[in-house]
Amino acid sequence: YAITTCDDNQSVCVALNISQMLQKKWQSDTDRQRGFRLEADGKAYSLSGKRVYKGWSLCNCDLVLAQEVGNDTLAVLELSPDSLVLQGRKGGEIEVFHSI
Image 1 (cartoon, rainbow, N blue to C red):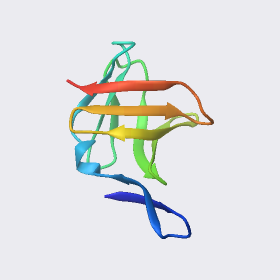
Image 2 (cartoon, rainbow, N blue to C red):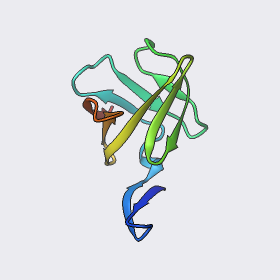
Image 3 (cartoon, one colour):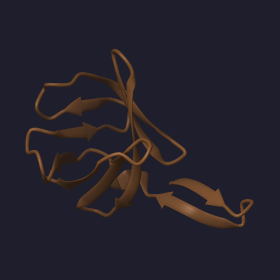
Image 4 (cartoon, helix red, strand yellow):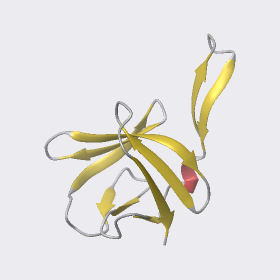
């Protein structure tokens, strides 16, 4: 699990079951060309091959997809066994993904 707290560590703000994110193909509901797969060893793969990821990690329950130049850092808003809702940094676009 990945967990962040709030209220001076008195409350859990976000708790992610990391195993629900792994070894699944996540495809965007709005753009079928967008999607990725995360592996337990830290490798990440684009489903379309348009992006090349060097790997992935979690930082404060944000999903960080490392690229050759820069990183995509996405807030995990919701995670269930078959859906993943991400939001770009600083209140960016919200995107829903489903496992395929």
